[in-house]
Structure formats: structure tokens, C-alpha cells
Length: 244
View 1: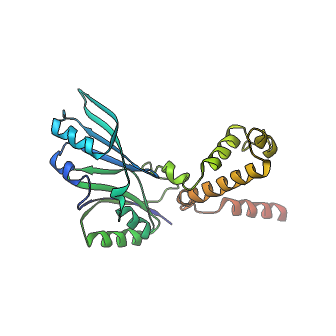
View 2: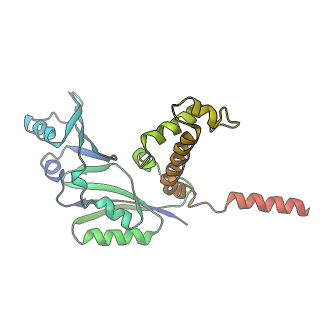
View 3: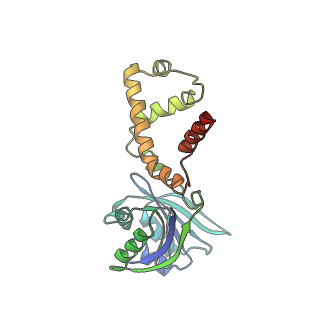
């Protein structure tokens, strides 16, 4: 079984199309977090006052520097532009989106990972129906590795975990609960908190369950190209050894 990595660019009306078309030297990188977007804007050219004013309107400026290397700005914006997002279509066709989205010269650049080439073709046909699209590359990944472009978004791994569940998970990790042999127990962990052992254990188990569920899609990608199940191979070896 092979994985497929596809990169393509699309052009349609979006919040950053006009500015990226008007300023062709500008590159906009867009990351989606659970409650906001983080936008990185770079240019090798010195910005005009008009450009700086437009950037101010994108969102809250977290960082801005202008020097001999050009412009570098990081902003934070709301998720309102994600309504009817193209990323939702990726999910419909079992394609895993690889951030960031890159906006340049009026085009939006995306990379996705899929288990089936047919899913990529179906996604392409869907997007082609209502926007300009150009496929830049499509590669079969046959080695048992995750592409360098694939970085698991942190907000996806910890999605739906509450603050208490995150705190319980961090305490267990930092106290050596997951080391072999374990350096602490559930009772000792609970004693470091203001809650009962049963309550702490409930927070920890729910955190573990949600984290592993969220990480499942990445685990499947890691193991998708394995030629054999190492656990089954070990079982076969033990049986052959016993027969001898």
C-alpha cells in the first residue's frame, strides 16, 4: 500500500487573494489553530505605507520587523474566513491537510496526504468545478516514512482535551509515570493535586484516550506501508522456535 502526496494551487475569492495579487513579492503563510488563524507575511522588498495599512486590517499584529532583509510580520486573526473552507473538502475525500496554506500572487498553495490515489483525483474534480486549480506535483510515497512536509498540527493532537485533562497528562509525564519502570503511582500523582485520586485518574484516562484517538490518523500514516506486522512476525518466530 502506498501513500500519495499531492501539491496544488487554486485561485478563487478569499481574504488574501487581492493583497497577494497586488503585491507579487509578498508571501502569506496561514496556520489554523483551534480558535484563531496565525498569519506570517514576508517580503524581500521594503513595504509601502499602503501595504502596512492593509496588513494592520488582517488581524492583531504579534510581531513586525523591517530591515535590510525585507518585511516579516506575524498576525493573529479570527476563523471567520474558514466558513465553507476548502479544508472541509479535504476531509470529505479522506485527504489529510498539511499546513501551512501559502498565498502568493493570487494563488493558494496546498499539500495533502491520501491513502488512495482515487481520493486525490476525486478531490481534484470537486475543486475544479468551482475554481481554477493546477496540480503542481503528485508523488507515491513507497518508503515506510512520513514525508518531511508532514508535521502533525499540535492543535489537532490535543483537540477536545480540557485544561484539567491537559494538566493531568502533563503532571504524569513530568513525574515519570510513563517511564519503565514507573517512577510514580496514580495515588502519588493525585496527592500533588487538589482533587481525589478517582477524579485525577478520570482526567488522566480521558486525556490519554482523546490524545491517542487524535493521533490515530498519524499512526496509520506511519504504519501504512509496513510490509508485515512485526507483532505477528514475532509470534511466527516463537512458534517456529517451539517446533524445533
